[in-house]
Length: 334
Ligand code: NAD
Ligand code: TYD
Image 1 (spheres, rainbow, N blue to C red):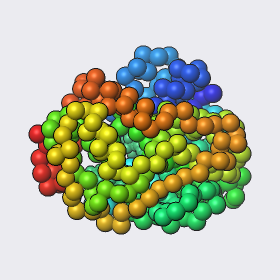
Image 2: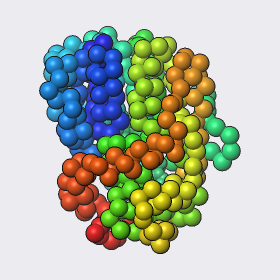
Image 3: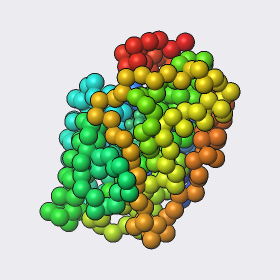
């Protein structure tokens, strides 16, 4: 396939681009604005591949999108492009609204004009928090944060393009991802790097919030599976095999890094913090996908990757992220 992968310089988008080129021999054009979270370094092993092309541009920029379609002649658009951190959406929701609402709209119009298949990458956070049981594709939308609310809005717009214009549109909703190349603002890489540096490990509230962890390679495979096998107009959940409380995750990271439990510090809780996410993937499993990486093994591999790839995170820890950390946590990184 020839694919236009929007947001392909981020964590999951780059994992997907790598998987499609290396394992499926696809031709991939990445269109990415390169926000603080998007980095060409994430695509370092693809830049010299003839099947790969990178274009810098925003999805809300019609001309950039048209140029990317002209350059890559894609059969499908896969949209990962997003602002993705809940805490940043609470502090500064602006870019969340423009990228998720306007950006998704511009891509949908382009897909309609060129009659392309369209896959929107979405999140279980659109369903809100669930105390017991698990979310299915029929669960109502009840987002809590500006991040999840704008993602839910984008999903509804995608569905409207199927119903109104017959666009071959699909949605794949993933649970919490982890793995290599994840920006360290997110729980797992933040805790790994802080643990390795002897910094404190800031657990929000009591740390008993539960997340359903999926390795990014499994979510990328789910997205490829939906693209190839999914029915137009439908949405598919892709949840990981394991649910864990945050405090358990942090304690495991402490053990894997040889840090000290005394580094764990309970800090003020996030406003509107969802207590638990849980996602049923039965529909996608029936289509032949299942996650392969159990959390225990995936976390161990992820810790090893961060240990071995300081070339990747050193520039981040000395740049924008430092200032963000000070604003968010009221203290400096070592
Ligand atoms: P990320 O923050 O690592 O990457 C996002 C990428 O989008 C970056 O490369 C950024 O430069 C790019 N981008 C942002 N705004 C853009 C714009 N206006 N135009 C073009 N590019 C833009 O995020 P991620 O964790 O890789 O998430 C990718 C997608 O997966 C998102 O849509 C997110 O909602 C979804 N998702 C993430 C998770 C998770 O746990 N990380 C879980 C489920 C779903
Ligand atoms: P995060 O990685 O931001 O993902 P999401 O909010 O999309 O689930 O956070 C995962 C969980 O970890 C969430 O319950 C919030 C919690 N958390 C902390 O306790 N401390 C932190 O410093 C961060 C970033 C997250």
